[in-house]
Length: 456
Image 1 (cartoon, rainbow, N blue to C red):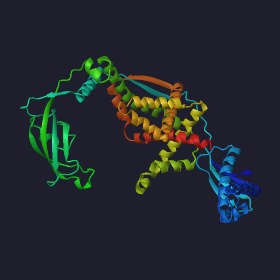
Image 2 (spheres, rainbow, N blue to C red):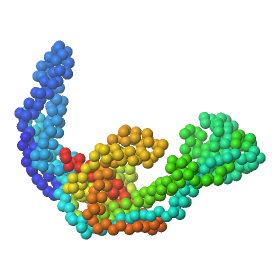
Image 3 (spheres, rainbow, N blue to C red):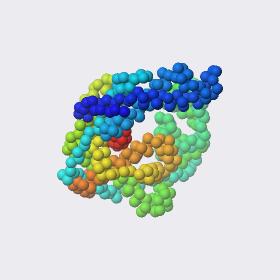
Image 4 (tube, rainbow, N blue to C red):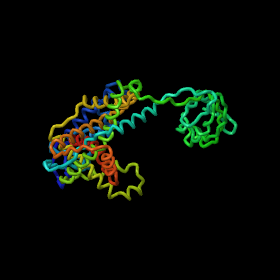
């Protein structure tokens, strides 16, 4: 194999590759011998068909198969020989091929740019630490108690009011006819929440135990059976019981029902939960400060094919007119994503940062613990979607890079309360934040993808 650099302009390199016809013939002969074991032709015993007969019958397809494999092998070797870091899939332009001829082709390669990192010494960012006020914790505690309140029976002669729980059986008809799902037993509704059918709750206000009442309702537009969608329905309801809410006593016993050791522990758990929700948003703001400075202070030549590929991913669900309308903005955003992906990747590689399989497994376990009752679903999701684990690995890798940068910059800690946090987050969520969020959520994917590409 002979490899020469035919041209080099910017990030694009064109290699000329020539594979000797003798090498191709050797590969052909090897493949024909392999096929002797597989091909069955009339007049020949299995495994005894002469190679020349196989060639006569299947020569063109065998040649195509051999050349295809040679192209794959020699392409990788040519890139490795010239020590090129490839961005995207190289393009092959066949110049000469055919039996008895040398294979001559050109390889058009877009290369990853050389990235020179600048010092982070002058970078500045704010690391927010939030203090959750007791008032907010108490409000959340009351909300939890309200959501998990207990009910006790009302007297048989007491009418149901908003907030009461009514248990009933029902039989429904559309145009006087029954339908699948037209009967229900022991249905419980908390009046006022409107969780069954729109306006259904209101009609149960005033009922008593053992009452029978006819209610009018409209089936939902998204009913599984299209013929029943938006149909007016009559429900005959037999009231089995009416209960009123018990006053919630927020004490150690209640805390234990919620899975905590005592009320102090429950408050601590609530505080951590609220703090975590704010911290997630505030960390995004700190991250934006850092990424903006990284992007602004570095100049990087970007491979056009990666930009085109990123735009394609971003706009795959858009209509043609929407793509055209936002063409300039999409290209700008794609360039920003690619640039940040390259820079973050370089920082990670220069500092030998890695994410182990154990770290990914530990993160999955954290997610499982954070979703009580849905542990099996979360585990199965990662087991059935290898790409989800790879994406998670990319996110963890990016976190390590950001943490490393934080350790090298002038990071100011600022303690704030929830009101200040709300104000800062609201400011952050003004226009243009969507483009930033898209940029950052995709950067790990870009980075992971670029790491794979560079090793081809």
